[in-house]
Length: 229
Image 1 (cartoon, one colour):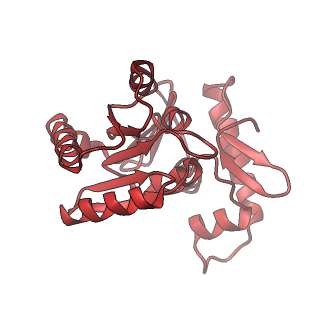
Image 2: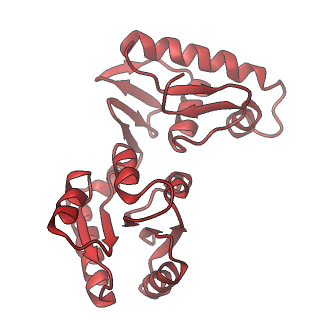
């Protein structure tokens, strides 16, 4: 199976250049052009992320902080900011490497190969079904969710709602969208059941972590993962 690389940069020319070069190396490449689009691509489970620092909206620092609890893969910062403080900050917020623009494509490929080899040696690819979000861990293989090392007893539908929202943090979904994704387009019933399932999920989460809020209500729209409910 091809290793998957997510490129995040607001400069289309750089994205295209990297995409062409890495596709030639037989990597599967997915792209995002701002910080918000990164969250939409996490469901593809990239093996490595190349992340620009200066972008409109969420910058690279903010994106890295937000996703580091969701992905274990290497994050390589790519930036024109050259100060030692910036390079240190990149590592402190959860990055694994820092390359300066303009960059050598030969060096970029070498660093990517080195990070992916390290991941293979550490066995990280065997844990692709494990997702971490702060003190919450979701095991997609066993349909289990743990908070603070306590298993939360979710039904299959409850688990699938949690998994769907967790894979798209900060993205708002209507009850209808959640229903179609979890129950399927041809399911008999209506989206009002999503509200009841979310209530039960929140109650179970609160028993373990009363001080945490994982699923937020966006009034008049639907639900999202993260923030205050």
